Image (cartoon, rainbow over all chains, first blue to last red):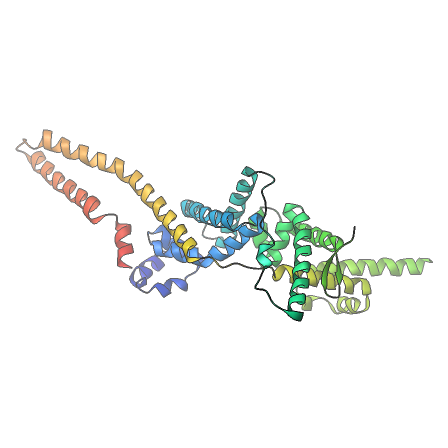
Length: 207
Length: 148
């Protein structure tokens, strides 16, 4: 890794050069004192961290705070990071643990700001009715999703919304891949039971 | 229901489970031929697949938010502040050590007309140079940053 540091100390004039480096190389440079490398890491992963946290908090202000806290913790712990491993699962694991701690500290009846995220500009005619239908379907889906146990919901979202691999989810949650598969199976099964699928999309099951 | 029917049903259920498990854990084209055939002919599996596809599509289409530049700057500022605090924690004991060494050399070593005396003045010069780099030039990490 030292040759990379030597190489880059001459070439970092060009900021774009950092974009081509891997996470591991950027970490090595950050540890060697190049703060621009950490900025690149932040810019590369902040969106995923923010959305990852948002799925847990459903609140934009908290997501912003938790994203900031996550990167601060990452910076503090960067020296202990095993560079043989992938950076993203480690980062998201820190984000997850920080957010879970934050949620535990909060009042259990803290309000969630879902709903606002699907509100878009007003439209007319068929377009509007289709949008209403879509929003209702999504609302039903969101409701069913939020009713799932945390571990099932998180696994489902990590896999299908965050597009993480089984291996990555396993590292983030600290459980085996077979447990991840099992959680995923149960999550989907529960969602299927809670929702029935009509021609126009998801419809909440009548109970 | 005779034994043959029961066996057939058992076999079909087992195949349903295999198809569903494989469909969940692998991409669709990875299914075996007999599993694909089963998926095409078994209405339960077909319904199951449609449900799963709808659920995953719903999850995939959930909104994803961009991060504002102000948040990025806030993150970077907090990291910078952290680094500054860490540095000042390291620099304070170092400065105390250097100052003590300097005072000791000035008070006790400068009057000796010997190699020790000469050495002490040299050490004092090194100390001053050290102070200069610490106070005027700043940290080498800053210099690297400035050069970027």
